[in-house]
Amino acid sequence: MKKIVQCVPNFSEGRDLEKIERIVEPFRGKDGVKLLDYQRDEDHNRVVVTVVGEPEPLKNAVVEAMGAAIDVIDMTKHEGQHPRMGAVDVVPFIPIRNVSMTEAIELSKEVAKEASERYNLPIFLYEKSATRPERENLAKIRKGQFEGMAEKLQKPEWKPDFGPDKVHPTAGVTAVGARMPLVAYNVNLDTDNIEIANQIARKVRHINGGLRYCKAIGVELKDRGIVQVSMNMTDYTKTALYRVFELIKIEARRYGVNVVGSEVIGLVPMEALIDSAVYYMGIEDFSMDQVLETRIME
Image (cartoon, rainbow, N blue to C red; front, top):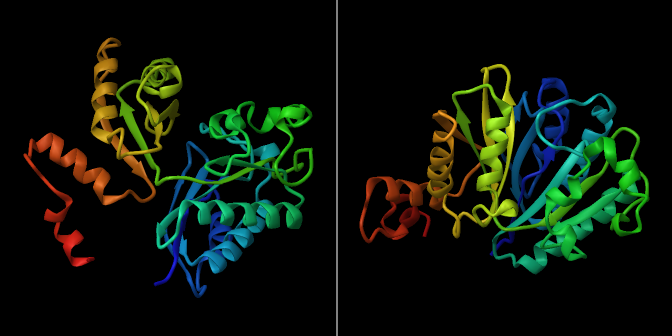
């Protein structure tokens, strides 16, 4: 049985189509690697790539794509709504089939080591790959963003796990790690007041006493004249999407604001959506075995 790993690298370019194609190209036409999806966001100014493959060819493709991003992205000129610290902002590996989390962690370390040496890039290990408890949370690593990283890396407690102790002049800093499947889920509000989105984000995210396995920030969608609560749901099996959606609706009422829609960025496990459908439809005693596609794939 083949070993299959998923990788969802986030690159800090969401506006220049030519640059995005340069970054994505290493994932095309490779034996043992399949590009599933890539979605760009102009407001966030980043592209999220979803790719699966066998460990060794996937590793080689990811390192090549990191090099392409470093070549075409200049972080000194980058602006966007999403927090970011590098051209290759974050590279997570997720075990999918016949791969243990331990193997995914080892793969993340191999990629971090090779990329840091090849591109002279400072790299932190995060999530399951973290070498220290305070580095498990990506938000803590990214705090200060690109502009604050030069000073941050001078502190002994923030010495990178791989690469130099100073920021790459144009590519910044990268985080690489292994984690559970994550759902990038955003909820849109019918207001342009970013402070309302920020306040709601504080209420729902775990770090401020909100829902476990929820990370959230407020983001402006200037082209639409609205704001959103942008979230990473780090374990959808324990904190369901419908739960955070309903909580945001509750919190929005205090500001006289309505939810006008939501979106999923990148790919999403079928179970995450089925779980919410079962909740809203009130289906009793439902099992994933009742999903046609589940039985077909057995």
